[in-house]
Image 1 (cartoon, helix red, strand yellow):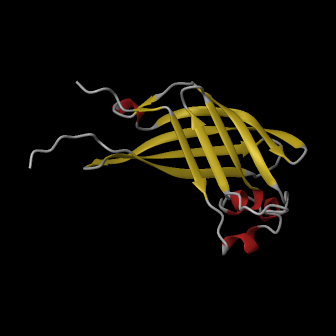
Image 2: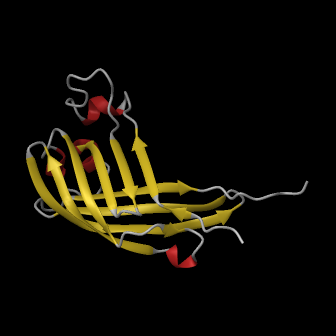
Image 3: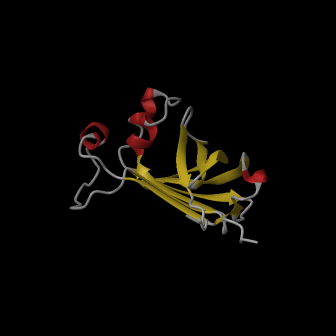
Length: 167
């Protein structure tokens, strides 16, 4: 009997692009010699924590449901800290994990300002194949103080299966 495949942590980063940066924000890399990612997400399922950092204009422009005015609302990078409820490692071998919905609640730091957010995190199985299950982690976050401000991202998760083949 093999041990269950547990998803405890997940980190995803969208690197800065020399093509996208001029169109997105003139404030990215202000005073910095190294480019910061457009978005970086860290999910700690075991301890129930989501941390997101990114360029505001990229985050808003990547989502269709936001008002056009939201893009220019903030010119800086934002950071978001949220709790994931319930906090638990996700058993990817369990069929009950497909379609799993977890609640999110936290706060967004925009420069010197803070606002509160709420949302959902969804884990969907796309398929199981030769290399193992492929999943999507989708999170939907809503800034409670900015009307029509939604962040939705679908992030891929690839796993490998340790299988012994006789050739």
